[in-house]
Amino acid sequence: MQTTGHFTVARWDESTIGADEHPKLAHASITNTFTGGIEAPEVACEYTLVYSGDLTGAFTGIQLVCGILDGRAGAFALQERGHFGTDGKIRSTFEVVPGSGTGDLTGLRGTGEYTAEHGVPAVPFTFDYELG
Image (cartoon, helix red, strand yellow):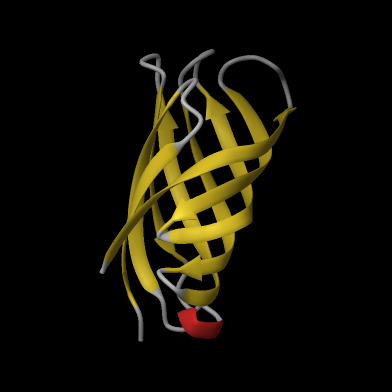
């Protein structure tokens, strides 16, 4: 099955780890709000970022989604990996952490992706998944 929707960043707290020069390592604690195929008002996210330049770099992270997926209630974790560049776009792919689904989402498997644009608050995503 495939579902789509949007997420918006509700909170972004970022701090540099170590020296403030490139390549620079940072940690970010984020809260996202999902609407559409995934309805989740407060998705906790933890990211590690490396800035290779002021506007370029890569990141990895985990999101903990507690909400509703296409009418099914539960929770699951997403492992995410992406990069960002001077074009102002953030590209990411994500997958369900195996065994993390709870409630009606027990046995959830899936992958997804998004491309965010700097300054655009609502980020569209696609998510292909299976249950069972």
